[in-house]
Structure formats: structure tokens, C-alpha cells
Length: 244
Image (cartoon, rainbow, N blue to C red; front, side, top):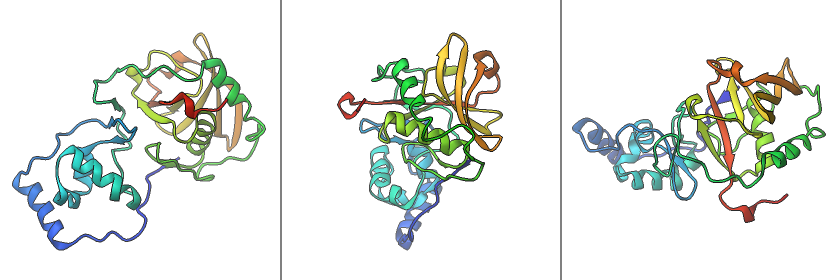
């Protein structure tokens, strides 16, 4: 279960700012063109066009991508504003076209598998884990979540660290799967974590599998054709920040 982050605190906007923002929108002040989110050098994921469209009052302080990103970093994030559309299937890296190669992973696939399996004592087989429960949030992810989403996020954070970047890939961008990948499947209703990869066979762990935690379900990658909504993949920019 995915949930949009709610706003926190009271949003106070002066009348002049609102009027200027409305004027900018209706009188044609140049705003960033519609685009997919992209990753900024500091690791933040942001879509200036989406932010300006959903928070028009902020355009009173500037309409460039830099102005809008600065506003989000200093004000918007604390107020629960979304930096990009959570439904956007593609995140650009450093402004490069879709399909940009991610940095080399810090961990090998075998190490990630080992780290995931080490969490079985924390999340034992059969542990009650129903939809709508165990709400969890990490601002690196597009949304907070409960149920299967919460389980996947927690596993991912424990393996890669809460500061590890998140990239969401559309199905056509995924040529291979890796341990630690979060797969959104079943017509965008269920999330699972890849534990290991053996050829075309993926071994999974998941929350809210019939209301419980389940380890070891196997699927063939061919079953994901037409069923996969997106893949969320983690990577770590600074190996020195990792601990084995």
C-alpha cells in the first residue's frame, strides 16, 4: 500500500506571493517544461515542472529549476511537499536520457543476498504483516508506505542504508535484475524484494503475502512481462559510508 506524504505544519503564504504566482501562470511567465524527475548532484530527486505546477505559490520566489529546487530544499520538504510525481516511471540521472548506466554497485550481488537473508530473524516467516499496517517512511523513496511497500522499504534500508539513493526504472529500462531490487507488480498493487537471482529465476521476500511475511517464493522473469510497473533500485555514491 502506497501513501502520499501529508503536509506537516501550517503553510503560510502571503497574498502578494499568491497573486504573483497566479499571474505568472496565467500571463505566461516561463516555467520549466514538463519533464521527468532527475537526480541532482547532491543526490536529491526533483522535477521542477511538477513542483511549480502543484505548488504555484513558490514561483513568486523564482521560476528557474535552481530557484525551485532551492525552495523545495529549504521550505517545501519540511512542509511535506512532493518534489516530483510519485507515479513518474522514469528518473533521469544527472539530466541524462533514460537508460543512463548507474554507478558500479558497492556490494556484489552475493553480498546483497547475504545481507537480505541475515534479516530473516528480524522478519521471520509467517510474521503478521497486513496491508495498511507498519507504516514506514524514508524521504529517499517517492512515497511512504504500509503493508508490502513498508516491508520492502525496510529491507532495502537495512541492506543499503537509509541514505542510499533510489532510482525508479520503467520496465523497458530493466535488462537484468539484481538482489535488492524492489519490484512493483500485480497491476501496481504489490511490492516484493529480490533476494537472489539464478538465471531467469528470482527468489523473493515480501510482506502482506496473504497477510504475512513470506520468504522464498520463486518467479520466472518471463512472468514480469506486462505485470511489472517499475523497479526501485538502490545505489551508494560513497563506498566509505558503507559498513559490511
